[in-house]
Image 1 (spheres, helix red, strand yellow):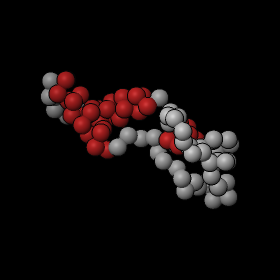
Image 2 (cartoon, helix red, strand yellow):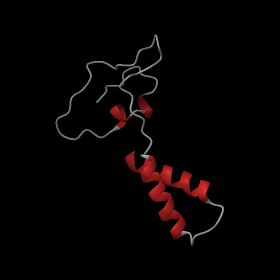
Image 3 (cartoon, helix red, strand yellow):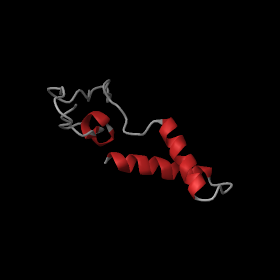
Length: 86
């Protein structure tokens, strides 16, 4: 887990935004390097591509199997999965 502090990417990092469950290790300070603008411990909040694919498929089924809506279903699935984490 990361304390965030002055980190500019903390809202998109799972190490900062994930729920704290029980005993977990924390960085003493944010590992973000302002000189290189990089964090080697950054884990993006985006859901796994396979989870998005399955959710998009569910949405496609629920919508009645329409043609030409795959991008909309993908984006909706991604948003729904991200919203579940928040």
